Image (cartoon, rainbow, N blue to C red; front, side, top):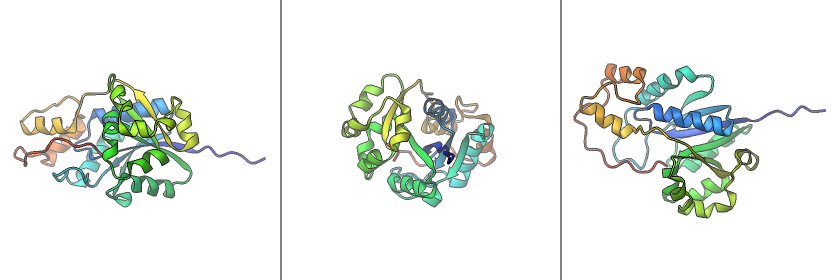
Length: 228
């Protein structure tokens, strides 16, 4: 009698992480608990193509992410997205699925991204062919449910997380109290001289000081666009 090999369940949480903060860790933890994940991979993007300003150098953002995740190395892993990087999320997801055929991946993102999901390249292919977990603050769920992407994929929404891994596609909404930290606001506070910033891990803040990150006279940043 052959022994069934259990497939690993891994969450993918992508972004610029410029800088990484406790809200990012919180999202990963919630996804792990609610979805029964074996691990969460923090995919650090070389450059978000929707952002006009250049991100902080990748090696600095990877180093800061490693500092944040070090206490949780048994389940939280930092991954340089460069080997899989394209301007389209669908290609990154397809590349990871091809490289790790024995892993069940689920893409993790905030409910605000679902609202703008129809602006992503080939968004129908992503939601039709990959498992997605939407992390929503209380009150955000209604707007997410009314989005163009949610209407498009209404037939593959599930209220049972296990269904995501059985079907290898569909989307699941997790309502949770999210931390109110934003990288953009942390950068602004830092550049105006604030220190010991709430939500910024001390090890990350120390790294920012040691490496002279986020100087106080950068070009004006545009409003943060939705992630892809």
